Image 1 (cartoon, rainbow, N blue to C red):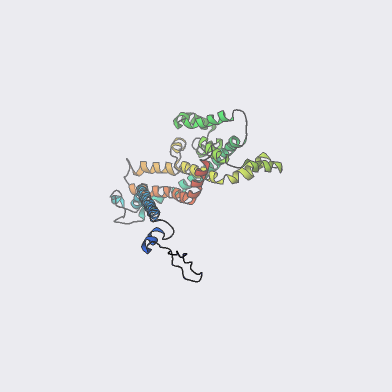
Image 2 (cartoon, one colour):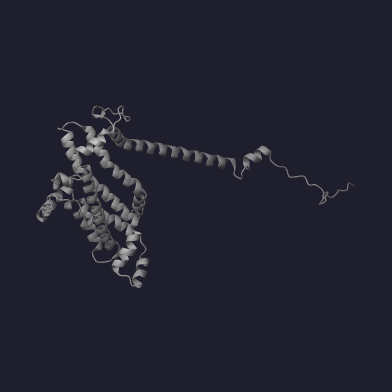
Length: 323
């Protein structure tokens, strides 16, 4: 009779053979950094797709930047060219000259026009920012009957074309005796702007009301709450309003054509129009003077945009998320 021996139990000190394992190459492929091969390949493909999309976006933005920057680059290049080479469409002048900048200051009182424009721009931007912020604060903070209907009426005024109110506005300023002065170019902003009221209201709706209630409990008046708390917190939206109005007033030609008569009161847009009449169409055809004056008139706006672009983006994005 055959005796069946019990299975041999290894001693705890005896070496134990490791369990059968997959080949090293399979382990490296399946384990590696702890991620299966298929998942790692999909992640690598996703990263490659994101990289390609990013390259395409950068290429598209670069192309758009070139398209939008080309006119100004051409203008700057033409300002350094003599009369016969202004329209040769070459970005690098064959004959480089600084004489155009000296000539334009002799032919036109650019310093006076720049001063008039700066004065009107600062007054217009400041008044419309303050007046619009007051109206916006009233619509955002106070609760009263008919508030929604009244705010809709304010927004409805944005639908009125400028030509509808042009003649009545002129008659008002003429009756007040301000035609021929710089007052009509900025004083209308004392009564706020519907677009800026909407922009500032949307931003102020996102301000914490508990902060204003706490200030009132501490004894702050309504004006103190608005001036010392609401306005500082609304600085991004106020910056957007101010910069937008600066750009609008700096390039405003229509009102300057209507109200300004004397050459000494001209703003930059009105002065450029007079230069076009004198040296451009029907004049002496000195287009190098016109393009040089245009560069001088455009440069301040570009500088202001680069200085305030962060505030513009932040103010628009923050003010557009509240309903």
